[in-house]
Length: 320
Image (cartoon, rainbow, N blue to C red):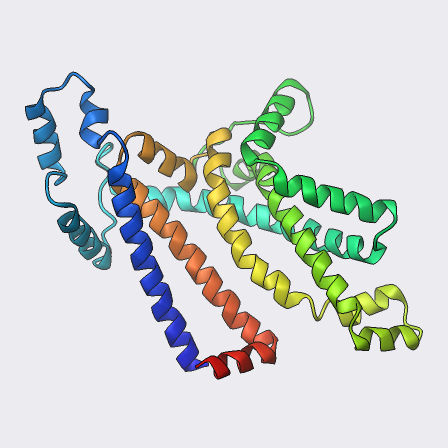
């Protein structure tokens, strides 16, 4: 297990290095550089060259990349070219907002997705409950966040439905107002993850229900819900836990759209503003931070899976 963990950590480091290289090159291949956005189309070549030299953009790309990596290894995330503020300070302010939004969405996902998947599987092919669960899963998976968010903003802005749209203030209103301002964005963000979790849970439950030990429990006269609690729930943890890593990645990525729609000052909106202004350091730092969070969650998910299911550990030992 120790050798496997070390290999996974090294693989994660290589993955992050590859992501950093791709992001670094991609943002510089975008049409229009920082000097074009700041100076406009009427600026002279000399003015553009002065701005590029001031921020080191006139150096070869590989030199800029190694300088950036060296700064990262030293704990320096860089400085925003637009605001001249340290990027680390901005991330420290915006990270709790995105983390709270993702945590609220993940809570809704677990509270609704798993029971809905179990109910859909138990109801089988017939019944209104099973049909409604399948319909919700299919609709939720295929519904884009920007469309659902736009509809929610319109409805809650026009009608007195009890929840407010907007009113978000970073670090000035306390936890309570911030939590209330994030309820609607969290619900919008959780629709896809609830639907995906319900679909995965349903398939996992249906797979367990055909196992011999479940047939034996039925033969002993155990009630359906007793079988669900004592036999099914213990065996569907691995698929749900595996999905957990993908859900976290989705929540962090979907926060970009949701935060922009609801005007929330989180990591997603910070990255979008960096893209609009060609603030390369901001885009690189936010994307790398998000990728790091996903890699860490995936690594922890695999470790917990090995602890919960000895068969996973045995497979890893055979693959070494």
